[in-house]
Length: 288
Image (cartoon, rainbow, N blue to C red):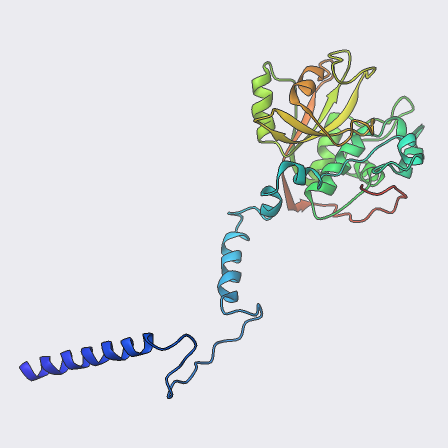
């Protein structure tokens, strides 16, 4: 029994000496009788590629971390650069202002698109910004006629709240129409959890920012709680388009005589997108 214990101790000491010898080798130096093991090849070009792929599959693909984590980590100004902000009017298009397009001159039903297309510009902004696809305001106008009960009338081509909601839902978005909250704090709290909102503003309610505006859809993004500011996509005014404004301006100007005052988009689902339109065929001035 004693000899057996001595034998075990001897083997243990021998292993320790071998380990000590290997750790004293110079970096990159190998024992003479050392044979490199053959590592499995990976398509990623590194020994951890398989592990990384499995991590991505289990974490990112499972939805535990958003796929657009890259854009989330960007600074607000950098994130704002990714937002689409189409313009509806002929002046913007003919003067070569970015985001203006030939859709402004399109005769839709009984009216020119430039006179009523603000809602479609806002929806096209949302679709092109929050999905991997791209569409023009005129593209989503055509889609709205099939996805909802919308159809332009002789009086107006403007789209209503219910048809706007149906159109966006058919394009894969979780969204809901809302009336103006009783307090500004409630509006602030909701915007913190909203990816984008289409809001109906009127200078009859408040003219601090919008003047001579009986009713107009605009699109707000990227609410910054500390500064209490939002990024504005303003389809009717190229000077105010793509600017940061106080959220309070929006709340005060919400048009209360309308059935609803804003539509909030909270999520997008690729599976629920029945459209998947991609590409702008209309002549336009480009993004920037």
